[in-house]
Image 1 (tube, rainbow, N blue to C red):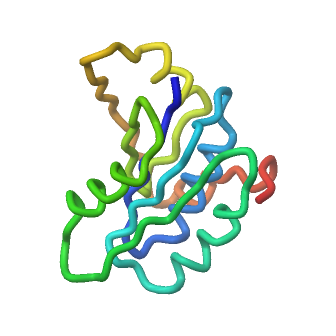
Image 2 (tube, rainbow, N blue to C red; image 1 turned 180 degrees about the horizontal axis):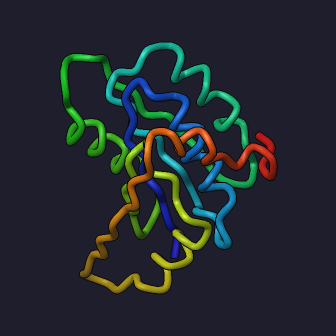
Length: 137
């Protein structure tokens, strides 16, 4: 089964990079990562660029002009760009645990969806969440 992870983002390249680092640190890599960008500025494009050149995971950046909150629209554009059989949606500030994709694959069932829950950490602890020591882009 081909798994696509759609990561929605808006002007948070710092957290987006941590999410991407988490996705390429999975026990089972996603087949593709689609960054669904709801009109971020050039800082996000610059942060995403190294990820678009990866060869181990297809990564694409789907962007739309900033015309207010249009999350559903950019997610639909990302779905349209997807090649996956199974779509996983992730917010651009939710760092996935290393078994995230594998767990979705285990729980996947035709005609069904699975919903997870995130753990919210304090703002003080947030800078410590990084994969930069183990992942190179």
